[in-house]
Length: 343
View 1 (cartoon, helix red, strand yellow):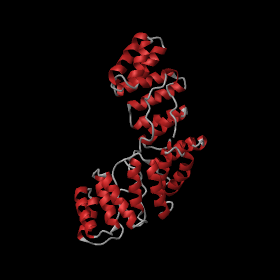
View 2 (spheres, rainbow, N blue to C red):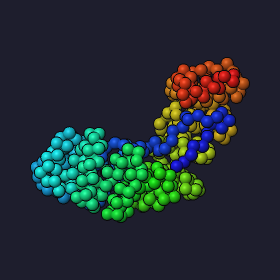
View 3 (cartoon, one colour):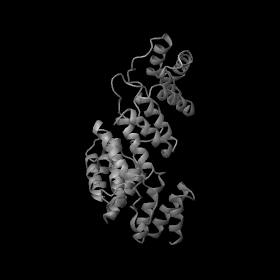
View 4 (cartoon, rainbow, N blue to C red):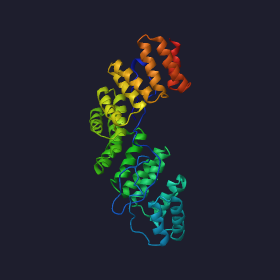
């Protein structure tokens, strides 16, 4: 995985920058399968899985409970869906789709162990049910056990070669295990099926850079910097900053801030300005961050460090003390307290 590059420069390293992709996080809702092919549009709060509100079921027994259960999932009435598919599974223990849908309901109700068991039953009954493999491996990935997820993903891909969502989950697992060189082709497989998916593309850029292909990774980040999505731009700017690509960082964050002002982004842009040795612009960003959110401790810390560098001790003490008041004894507060000791 990527190591953190300091944007704090001569001010020291402080964990003010977010890591990873802001537009993508693990955990969240499960999904149901589409009729003809797997939907590979990721939800923003899950590993790769299809959206139950958009999906159509594959052919299934036309029992009343089954049909009503599908409609309940579409309507996000997961308690009802769990009850209905529980009845179907009991009456038809070899119905793989019913086991899968039961898992969808359970996962959306936060019952991950039960959902995992349902998905495992579904893929045992029907090994080519790709969406069950997708949700099963997402649950395991979300638990933080990439080592356990990887062999499951490989089994799913053996039955569903180059499936885009499974390829993406494979890339996530390999990246989590520090196997960036192996993750790169997995990201390529996922992107080949969904070339506009920004979450996959961002992960691909990270994997390329971690695998030593920095120029290729920067090229992909350059493509992401053309996005109009402020979350994509923010994540891209952060990563470019950590890579000390300060011009690219500033350009991406200019666009992000134009549509979605945030104190954290002003501080990040300020650190990139500082990296370019434009401390006047950096300080302006730190001040703007404070105006945007007066309780954002890193803004006070970096403003204080700038003022200390300028020899303005009284103002520096005021800013650093404010950082300590907000953040306490850890993180930025700890760094601010240490800086105060030298004033």
